[in-house]
Length: 266
Ligand SMILES: [Zn+2]
Image (cartoon, rainbow, N blue to C red; front, side, top):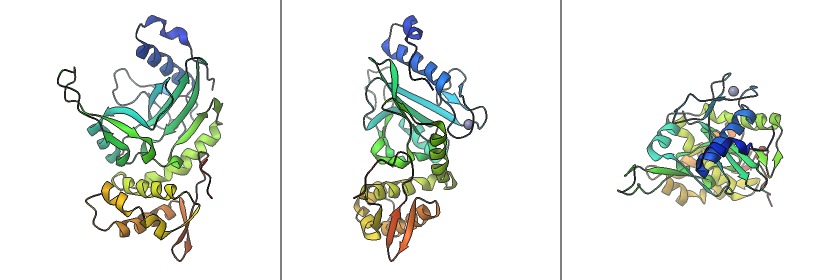
């Protein structure tokens, strides 16, 4: 992987947005590899495919690329709200590469991957419909709220201009791909509870620590009337998938082994 961008590709375009798209898409085509299998390159999607930018010839995984010269904030604007939520629930959400490049360095500075199965519905925020005067009046887009996706489900590939070796990226991907064994419709609950576990900011925690998130989880899942039972059930599933360990008597350990596990526990 080489981080420098080929700016000359943008010369044919006058719009900055188009220049950025052409340059970063080409960078992806020549530098991205499949984190889900051993394929060292990705193919461009057929023209005008609205839902993904690249696909893997070997494992048929599909990928989107969002690139910006602005540092990655806590929200990323994405496609239509309804189709994103449907894609999550129907288990056909593309894996999303999020890329930040430097204008001065003319290079990729940060790149991470949110696997398609890492998105909970709670991370998809509805935006205001477009104004009646807009070309697509009434269209409702969405924002991806990054803080609603547990950090351990997001895979760093380039961090502050340092390339994470591909075997580590693939190991991270394999570790969390166990989530795919959970039916897509049930995954949101699981990820929401895992995110609460992360917010405790302690490797060792108790059931009571997670119960404190009952009001938040009730707001996120208003149709569920027994949130505490749901929390216990999700903790069992997280144990079966290897994300937490049961230590007995309502005590747990959060096994945060992803290379993104930079949070320090006190
Ligand atoms: Zn692949």
